[in-house]
Length: 161
Image 1 (tube, helix red, strand yellow):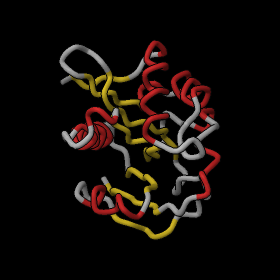
Image 2 (cartoon, helix red, strand yellow):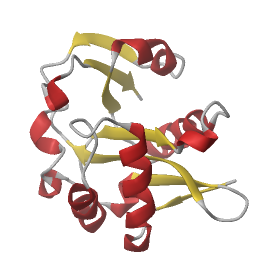
Image 3 (cartoon, one colour):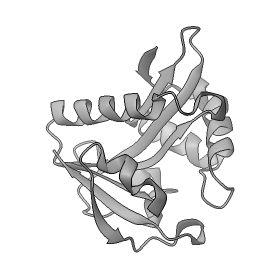
Image 4 (cartoon, helix red, strand yellow):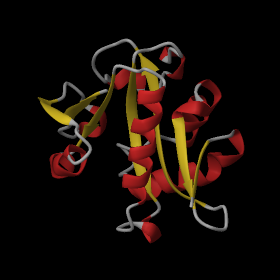
């Protein structure tokens, strides 16, 4: 398995994995992913299988803002390369590869990279059932998020680095 950053040529497979992982109202559209790739490909971490196929990915943007807000999802121009924190948008694994530790392997890499870059923290939102998963990495729940993305209740979690 190999972890690398994304390039525009990955767009189709990323869009397919995202669509298979979230209900339409919650997942990023192909165009949203394209904008993110144009603005911050270095904030995409892709896990490849032994044949070089992408099987999971994490993406987000850098900012100095303290909380993940809904406008960040579709406005990649808000990315600030010097930002103190990473806002994670998606942690997704191709359904055929779930339950094998792919997301955990990626999350460990993202945390290592953000620490090495001297970032302050990592913020994400998740559904209640995923709170224990992210807690394993040291993320702490800050309660219900102000996000109304996809008309779902989200919990904001933060990992101080």
